[in-house]
Length: 116
Image (tube, rainbow, N blue to C red; front, side):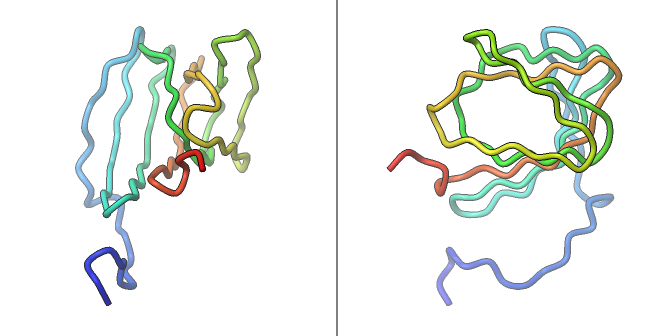
């Protein structure tokens, strides 16, 4: 095994600290696990949250609770509700999250989403 491998482990998210990130409006709370080339987060957006930037990073996003609208800079939008997911590679979308009533997401990103 090398130091890039991830050994079996369970994650008690209640023990992972929450870091606050302000949006254009509202606030996001991130709980983050960082591995070599891999980031896993539980992210909670408050009611009225609008991201403060357009993101070009690739993600796998799974909606755990609530509803979020994913706006793309070119005008397309989609809605995720509990149990739904989206996936996109780096640099294939310019997107941001917006939520009216709040949402809880699991977001996974990392080197494996870089364009080939």
